[in-house]
Length: 355
Ligand code: IPM
Ligand code: MN
Figure 1: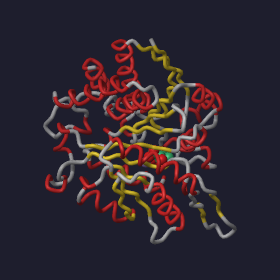
Figure 2 (figure 1 turned 180 degrees about the horizontal axis):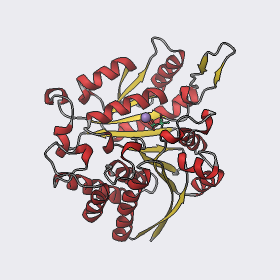
Figure 3 (figure 1 turned 135 degrees about the vertical axis):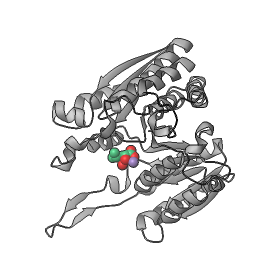
Figure 4 (figure 1 turned 60 degrees about the vertical axis):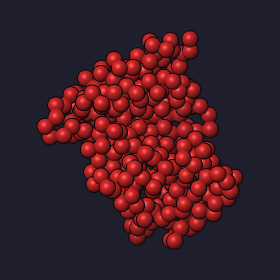
């Protein structure tokens, strides 16, 4: 019997509600397959600011580093949006932990689930053979982590940079992933304008040569944004930088019908990863037990798969989600006007029972 220590960072807004439902699913997996999951709950984001005055306290970072993996809800909310300096805002907690844990590879799978096909905002003829892709987003570099400052004239600067080594390691993650999927990578940049993108493209080309079986396309980010809504079926693995990946993954998520369905895995070069939904803390619906917990539950499944090597258990969670959707259970974000809506905790119970 294996024991896994999970650092739990519920965060702000709907974070606590959705993480509780993912824990229900993990506990059910533990019970069925004979694993023990031990949770160490710590604060991050606005909740940490309220308690410790900073968005990423040392105790949280220490607990995360000592864990086998981190499960995160969401951070941020209007209460902390105007804090000065900006380094004290909740989002800095998230960026800080990504950097400190060296989580350079962010995988964001987006697919249209069969039972939710009608929630896809695209015309059926646009959806073609469907949407089933992974955005492989570099997560610890780019303009997110370059020097930020305001000069004497009050001009704001954000330094955008990518080193060859940073591009190489994320490219390898994408190509390795492609080998397990459809052997197709689309590398996305803005090489017609940006020097960082020229480093990106040259480096990806060099790594691509190590994977002769993988078909590679090189797209500009503006064209990619357009192609995603015109013909999303053409994509499989989208390899891109931190900023473009942030934007394109939101776009891909809404094609699936709801941002409430998309999980993510942030991986380092060890098995310690961080798993979180791609959506935010939704302060407008926090505390009302109406959020969709599926993205977080699927993030827990990714944790089992990528950090703990428990593929069968991850499959069981994903299958339970699929079955719950097939049986017609819907939270508000994925319900049609005339459909009955269930609560966040009801969805969690239903999925746990189906595992
Ligand atoms: C995400 C979020 C974060 C990001 C924010 C909250 C800092 O939008 O995980 O996509 O930009 O990376
Ligand atoms: Mn985002």
